[in-house]
Length: 474
Image 1 (tube, rainbow, N blue to C red):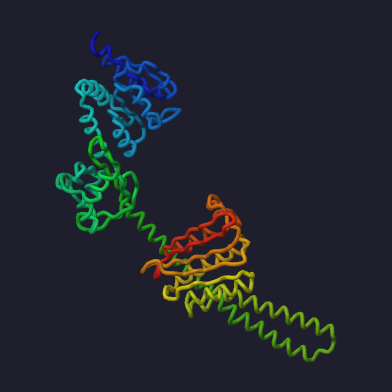
Image 2: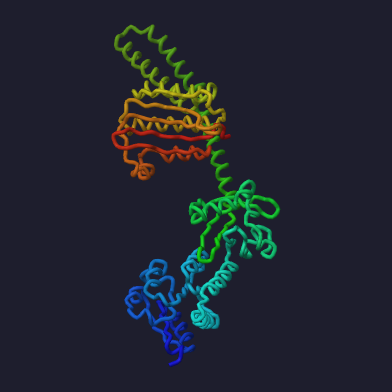
């Protein structure tokens, strides 16, 4: 019996056309082919030792290869594995080779290339050169990838640099292969890049490896490029593989959106100030004028019923004037613009006591009061929104507002209450429910000044809101 007659191939392919094509190619080379269509059929086999090669479609009807690949490798320890797929994803390709896959084909399959691959796998199986073959395939994938793909060794020296990377960074592969990858990083990271690699190799700790990060890279001409970087450690090859996307357009879009949002917020505030001025300068004056004339009319009235009617009208006018004053203050708190955030918060505390019987204690560091107009408005409105939430949801009688510096650049405002508290696990649901806590509004306002917001709470223990903002954000 010849070597080929003793070697069998197991094929898992649900597509009839692809299955027939692969069977014809392999059978023509003299190999025995056993075919299955599903993961269940594949894993029910008992004769794993019969196969020198197992060919797997990445997407089977009852599961994809990533989910059960380790089990197959455990069962068929002496078999080489090949993946075929109709999807071209660099991440999946890199993961496949990391798991010691012998080859990776994207449909439609080139018959000649596929036949050569099967023969090569058989030959390399005989000479135990799996590593060399896998490295060659990995290089082909890297070179054809749409994203920039760079591989480096354990010393940070560039080993491969595909065409997309050449276009992104302005270097040719010939001139940059053999250089330290730190050449592509900006100062001062460049001076410490090798230390980051050494630290990872010694401790296994890194905020880059195994994660996707937004960073800045350096073009050949010195221009900084905003990138999204995903780094995979391939210890069996003693290399790191980095997949890099240029996110310049996305960042420009985000910047324009932020600028538009800020402009809309400023315009909205200007409209509120105009409306407040109308209420103050016109409507309030008209109401006060009516009250004066009403007072004059009351002096000439002798009938008790008429006096009661006019007295009631005067009372309603007073209430209307108070409402317009309150609306004016809420729409455009003059004290905020003229006296600053601490004084505005004092007025707000007094207003919460007067209107809602909520006692608000203040602990404000006057030295950290922001001067930027938009920052003052956003922080004031956020604190007011939180205090309204305390009144509506917390069942609290006391609250405390604090404002302190946490660095030369940032301040923190806290709003705490002695209310019922809530389960933080329900936080996301409460943010989006109609009639909920309005926390999305707070987060949106803070996004205009690049602020941060979170809550600490538990049932029966009250709630504490945290706001972090730059002391100067405009």
